[in-house]
Image (cartoon, rainbow, N blue to C red):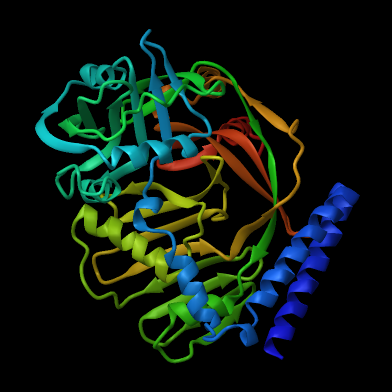
Length: 450
């Protein structure tokens, strides 16, 4: 009976999505959906309880799904620069497939610590531009301990070293360099043994000409020197049931009491845990005032961030670490599409964790997630200008370059709640005063547009 109810509910959701697809994309989507339905029902029949010797509860299946993403996949590289022999640098846009293969090879290299140096600003940037190299960048600093896990402990980096980049040779593997942007410190390791070199990896035709520079905040900024054309995507959006969060966030506690004020519902166990949920936006904030164990170091806070995402079921395959503030006391994670982060003025596509010193921790997230990608037109692309042009546009409305802490391609999340559809449109985003906003929004605000 339970299985029949599950199939019935599944078919109802598929019927609703069918209406959206046909209305938006015509009969071509009908054939695609028919194939999907056939596959889902086939899988469902094979997984029905009567076909299994030992049934697995729904909660256990969810645990397995969430736990499938390891810590080293969450704190992963998000940029690949290729330094050519002629001195030109190129940034690979859809970098993840190539980076994953490179990281796998790097794990087989045996490294031996040689020395570390603190460089001048000019020498640090010049080192990153060394010819005939690959430079893998992390979205923000991660502890040496995490890099050790990523590389299977082959690099004996200090546990709390704050690493932003790894430079590796494209041809003969002699040395590997790890970079700390904030202190302008470089850790140099000799390669004792390399199973496979990086020679096989060539520059993709879609890579864009770019260059490094260091801004006034001692952050390395990647400036693109040419325009780039990026695709627009559409996804079905789905809200996770509130009970899914209540069951894990209040596990082992009394059933939380609920109170409502307008669109905000507050769930509380009456002692240490509280969940606030906006029923209109789906934005949620969970506070725990009884956290056991202090997280005093950068590495401990980064590791704890992963545990909190795991606990709150906020670890889909496409969520990644984005940035940290105050030595890891505030951590931000974002959904990524084609290697680019999703931004919005709400917490759609964003998870933020704040760790306080008084046993208090907070996690802000959204009930809404991206589900099935909708058929897209390959011609639906947006041309983004070189970053220098974006800087000029901002300067024209009074935003000087020295106030811009960082700049990045990204996707704007635009939701159509009537059809549960999300459109992801590529734009330039800049960080000013620790806040990320689309360049077009900053210009509109400066011009009094809103």
